[in-house]
Image 1 (cartoon, rainbow over the protein chains, first blue to last red):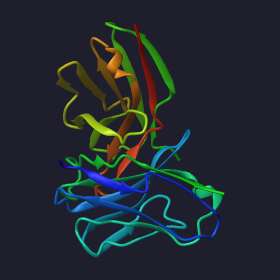
Image 2: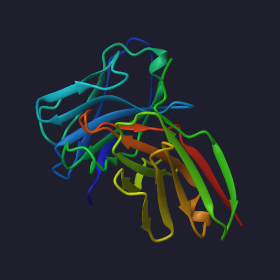
Image 3: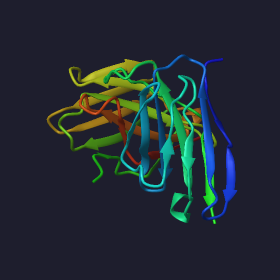
Length: 115
Length: 113
C-alpha cells in the first residue's frame, strides 16, 4: 500500500531532551515536507526537501533540523525541544517538486508534547 | 500574515443538503488551489483541486469554484452525507516557492442526520 509512515505517533518528552520523528514513504517520491498543525493556525511548513541531499527551510524552521540521505526517509530532529514545540506534526510527500500538480500525500501525524 | 483564510471555524449541515465551505486568499501569485479533508487521528487526504485558469472543477458530489477577481474559492458538497463530517483545509501553491502548499486554518463540517 502506498503510504507515508511516521513514528512515533504519540510522544511526551521533557524540555531539552533530543528527539527524532521518523518519516518514510514507499512511493519513490522526490519531494518531502514537514508541517505542524496548531489550533487557529492551520498547517505550517517547517522544512522541505526537493530530492536527496537537498533541503530548505519552510515558514517555521526554528528549533528543527532535517536530513535527506535517502530518497524514502526524511526525519525531523528536535535537538533541544521546548514547550512551544508541542504540536501535531505531519510528514508529506509528492511525486515531484513541480508546482501546480503538487498533490501531497500525508502521514497519519505525530502528536508531540514537550513538558 | 495568513495568506489563506477560512473564516468559518465550523459548519453544521443536515444530511442531504448542500455544504458550502469558503476560502479567501491574498497572494495573487497563487496558481493552484486544493482542498484536503481530515478525519481525527488521520493525516489530511487530498479531495479536489483547481487551476487558476479554470473557474470550476467537479468530481462527483464535490465541486470547487474559483473567483480570481475576488480571490475567493468555495467547495460545494451535494448532497452532504454523515461521512463527510471532517475538517476541511483549503490550500494554495505559488509557482515561485518550490511546491510549498500554504494552508488555511480549516473548517470543521458536521453533517447531521
